[in-house]
Image 1 (cartoon, rainbow over the protein chains, first blue to last red):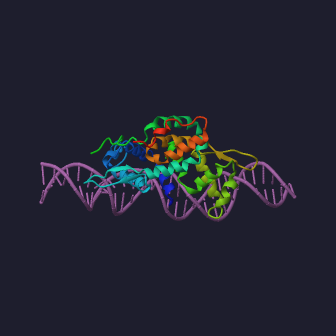
Image 2: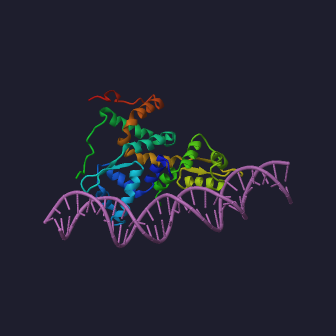
Length: 121
Length: 121
DNA sequence: TCTTTATTTAACATTATGGTTAATTAACTA
DNA sequence: TAGTTAATTAACCATAATGTTAAATAAAGA
């Protein structure tokens, strides 16, 4: 599965990893934050591997901060997926009106920054 | 990989299958049509398996017509992916302007409102 | 009927994925 | 320094995914 888009889709093909992304969509989190909801179901090394998959797929970026490894969403990969999806828009156009509605709510004050920086350490 | 969305993303995580979808986005095609571009690279049974993956993921529907098996895109699965993507829209908003432009070309009567404030501040 | 075309199934090999436990590295803390 | 916390690596195992070749099925056509 060499190509980037395949890696990205492959990374998204797991509920644990999608849940991690959902968590990261609300703000940065380090490995143990991401692990917390899953430690009843799986071990920490398993978490490490999932995070590595997300990282290699370009969906997240992991940095170093003391002994912590803060992770954040990497928008490029999401854009790649969104761009690929475009060619199939005609097939899911039922959501068109909702999308347009969304555009109308967001458009008047584009780029409201600093909104999602909750949960820092 | 039991859940539907994982199955869908898993099916998309392969360039051969994505190429088949691209072909199907231009209209119905039966198995040998879908196979044609890949018969130098892989066998027909391999193709059959790829198609089965797409089918199980709900991305395509395969019917019977004499000895042929016409396949077509199944929009529901694409909508599911698009819906999941929505929560990450804020991360790929560079494509926002292009998307808005698209909206205008597609529904000229509904014209996107509130556009005048974009980019101010 | 015999043959051809379209497609699938069976049986199998190889590699990838996702998990485990035990050990290790690295940085802060008492 | 010794101990604790955060995270990774190593070694391993089971299962799923992806491909192969050979054989089977099913409908159309001579």
